[in-house]
Amino acid sequence: MDKSPAPINTNDHYIKACILYDVIKKRPIFDAYRNFCKLIGQNVMEYPDYEFWYHRFYHKQLDFDYDRSADPVPKTIMDMPVSLIYKITENLDTVDRIHLRSMNKSIKEVVDSYPPIFQEISIEFIENGLIWKLDNKKFKCLKKGSGCILTRPNCSNIKSNKHYVTMGLEYLFPVFKIPGFQTNRLTLKLLHKPENVGNFLPVPFHVKSVAILAWRMEHVLSFLSAFNPGELETIRISSTHAFGIDETLRFFEAEQFKQAKHVQYKMQVIQNWIERFSHLKSFEFFLHFPGPLDFQITRDIISTFEEFEYCKIKVPCFLSDMWFSLRTVGRVFEEEMPFGPLKTINHRYRIPESNEFLEFKIEDEGRFCSMEIFKIR
Image (cartoon, rainbow, N blue to C red):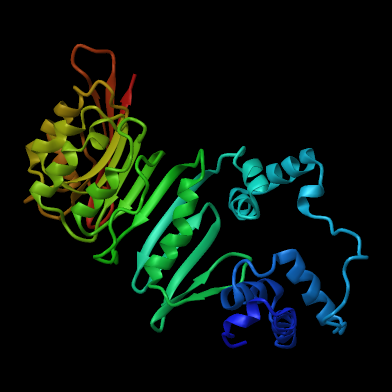
């Protein structure tokens, strides 16, 4: 159905001919109505009327002048008891409620009485595409030619002339604006983030746990700024590129880091920075090429952390004692070690002037060795 001249908006037969054309073309009714509104106008015909004529023509009833005045008034969803509408809304998952919300103002008010709470939202920029998941519902907006195509669960695809990022964010962003919106976990993967895309998250963005995979610290800090310090409890940061000293120190100065409880910083940390983790209950990082005595120093530093419960530190693992091996740390901790292959060392350290202990479990993981430390109260 090609775009028609303006008079079609007011010519009843032309309008119905357009509907018949879509029926003949066997377009699904929702796609047909969307195409109809795009070409003829949004306010020319409401969906219930379009649906009526679509089904008449589908069943070979082709009288364009059929008089509907004698027909019973069609029932709508708003004719249902209010209690039933609330019950239906209550039993829908969060994503389906969002679709229901767009039907009309009255339904919107009902849906908004159930704030959208997601367990996890993930957003990933890939090469020539944007992918996001709302709990277990996956959406994709991929580049196609000079435009893009949007794929949604249990819905037909949408083609657009817009840039895939523009189209994807236009579809995703309204979710964040729904009253009461919140998610427990947010994952951002920004390895292919277009240069012209800034922080698209609303401020403040309410979340307890965030994981950010980015190849620039400026992207990490930009998105961290959207989260409320103190409300954000868990931070996971990783990258395929090493961050510089200045970049890492900027992360340590962020209020979101200073008020977090759990941090996984999957990048290298030098020993002088370990005290910056003193406020955390748990943390993980890579220790930059420690010398033998650094393990004892690390133990002594962590033993002073009052909030500490657990940490996992990974270090490069080599066969020689030049940098680190299991036997190196065993000797530093004065542990007896058996002859032959050594895969694990356990160490128990009593915290001075305390009845609490630190328990160490050091394992050979090939290229790296992991050192897990637990506080025993």
